[in-house]
Length: 218
Image (cartoon, rainbow, N blue to C red; front, side, top):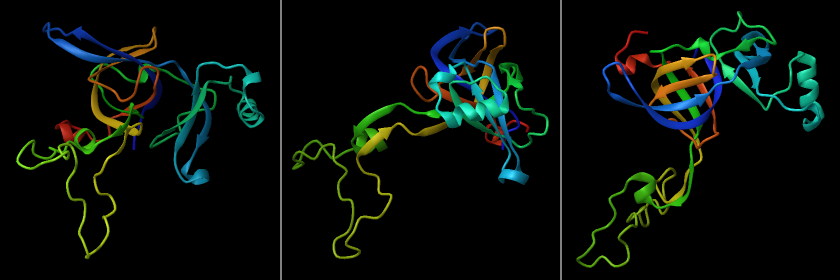
C-alpha cells in the first residue's frame, strides 16, 4: 500500500534535457491542491483512505447529498470526489490540503488512469496476434485468429479466450515512473515516460510500491 498519494490531471507530453544534455520524454501533470473531505480508517470502514476533492464548483451545481457531504465536512466543494488508499492516515485532518510538494525529484511513482478507448479491435491489434498466412490457400482469413476451441469435447470456448472486442478505456497503472520535476508554485509534476489516458484525464499518483522490480532499495 502507498504512503503518499495525490490526484492530478494529464496535460500532455513534452521533452526536457537533463544535466548530460540528453533528451528526456516527460508527461506534464497538473496537480492542484487536494482538500481532505473524509478520513476512512480500518477500525470504522475496514480500510485506510482519504476522500479528497480538488478545484472549485458552485453549490448550485451539486445535488443535495453531495452538498450536504461537503457542508458537514466544512470543506469548499470541488469538481470530483476521489479516494486515496494509504497505509496510515493518522497524520491527516479534514480540510487539510495535500500539495504536489509531497513528491520530489528522483522519486518513483505509480500512475493510474483510464486508458484511451480504441473502439472495437481485432486480435492482431488488440492482442498482437500474427494473423494467418498471406498465400497458399488462405482466403479472406488473413487477420483472423484461427481456431478458438474444440469440437465435441468440450464443445465450447473457454472463458478468457483472447478474441476481438473493445480495446482500451480501462483502468491502467504504469509502475515506477521517475519524477523529473515537482513545482509546487505552478502545481505541476513532470514524470519520465508516458501516462495512460487522453489530455484532461484524471490521474492518481502514488509513491511506487514495487521498487524491488527495478532493483532499487525500498
